[in-house]
Length: 150
Image (cartoon, rainbow, N blue to C red):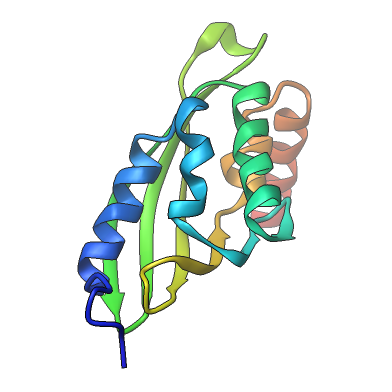
């Protein structure tokens, strides 16, 4: 049974969504208010456990990309779990003249009774959503997709 002071799952998810939509390098220090100490995180490029490694993934996002930000487009909450759909907007550093890119994806989150994330799994198609936007690699990926469709 949840602690009487624990937030409702809807409130916890609202807090998580607000954190991701307003994430900045300055507020990454507060990531321990979103993730449990032993939280697990997995996406197409990373699989880590613990708040510090998760924080480092988000810190690297600001090193590698210009103006990264998330826009949550949908959410489903059921029990201790939620599923978020989102757009990740960013610009490649030194590519595409600062043109805004969009990756569409989804996150499966499991929260503990205190409303902290214990499992965060991101789902998005790295080939379609990222590789095809890169110079040289993108042309190859588009060609491979056309060949596979024939």
